[in-house]
Image 1 (cartoon, rainbow, N blue to C red):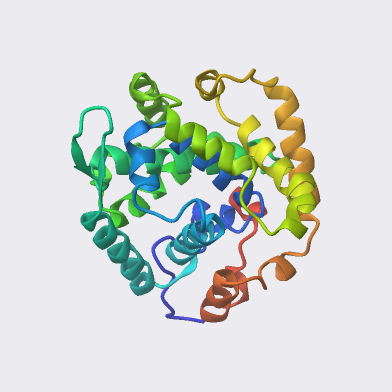
Image 2: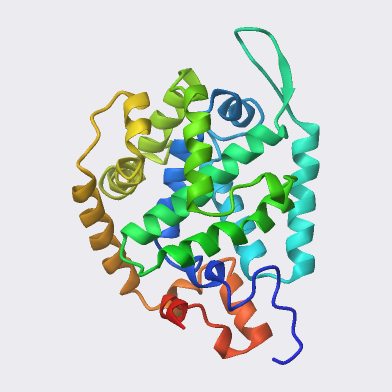
Length: 282
């Protein structure tokens, strides 16, 4: 549809092609495991949210934010960012060891959350079989300076390629730890509360998903959590197998699930806006 608003990224972006992939769900869980290793960041979540009782709702809200900022109009993306900034501006957390009270919207905490998400999305999608060149990976990271701006960060202070992202993680690693809060998130992700009748399904399906997301973490994260790191090649094979299975489900069927961001974007921009990883080679 000529003249329609393509949003912040648009159909020619790497982000547009990648974020419709079903492996984004596993990548999102990996991001939660990684984010929990920053003590100040994870306290901000656990002290200000219903994470334990509404984990699915929180996951869906995060997915809705990513979907809106990727496939929604510019206005919708800006509104979503404004809501996040407003919420962050009102919330504080307390360090139980020192009694220090700090805002959850501190730039350092927002940057950690951002980088953990982008690293997780990129790592899982590439290892699960999406053919993405190093140049396209750098473009993807650079594009997300825009999503960092939405949550209140200075885009110029956000890593813009793989080298800068790696340097950031090297710098922040001394500040990471698997404290009480990280252990709580770890335990929760493996055994989220559910209806008694759904416990068998949780054990068979969800646990496998969570374990695969955990297995895909970088070696230093496994070391902090204190569990042996699986062989990276084995994890990559598992990610590829899972990606192959999930991508066999027709995209149109997957996109029918709420909140249908991709279908709305295609209705707005026309069928050529359909996200597809093969377009990255154009």
